[in-house]
Length: 328
Image 1 (cartoon, rainbow, N blue to C red):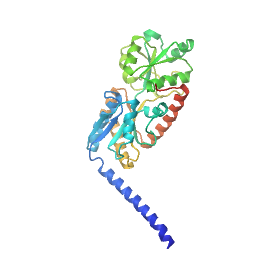
Image 2: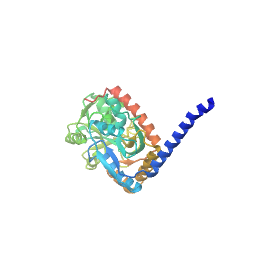
Image 3: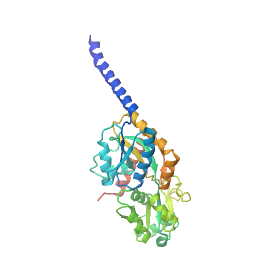
Image 4: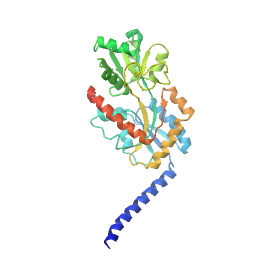
């Protein structure tokens, strides 16, 4: 008799799990049956916006639905990210985000979402390498070693511009300063555009700009490319060495874009989105579009993105603390 009492709750639990699994599988079979929202947490017109629209077109054809881009900008991407974290986990609201997802927990004390716990990783999408550039008429630097030698000879004489505190452009500079032991002054701007304008005008010395922004000025001879921040050379600038090759061992900063769904999204739905994204990233048309903005397509498993996010979150927490980086 006692065994029967024990068995009944167990049987009910097994039945509940079975029904839940069946419902999840049924949802995946019918998914998607209405438009899907891409939440872009920055204004229209940037690389992130372009990637979302390009992928959405291909994924829409694969899954026979529409992918609608909705821009929810503000607070370094936190407003859009928080809105997705609070969305229904059904696969109809997905987030495209940059590596700020890994940096913001260290920068913001009032972050109202947890990048690890509140999201279901879908796939890494692309990387857009940063490139160390200088105005040759101002500094005369021809190599990374020139930058280091000049900076060590005159501490805090040379400046590096950024698109704002906590951006990948800023963190690339902070990582460079930390790893080389040089002392340089950080000059933050409200966006990449004004920073590049002052670099071209000779008001600042260096910048770890995105290849997307810097490439036209490099081609015109107005800026000199000294090194890229990624571990491998960029196809967009194949003759430019990496910082590792240029004499900064272990240096790597890979500005990335990735897609996330709210935590609790059925694994079958995540898998369906992952497959569609990776198929899209392999298409020549999509690759060509990404190449045109300096982005290199990647594609990854959900687990690989989860591991990558955890690793980068820990890395940037350490650097932000070491360099005492704060959002004003």
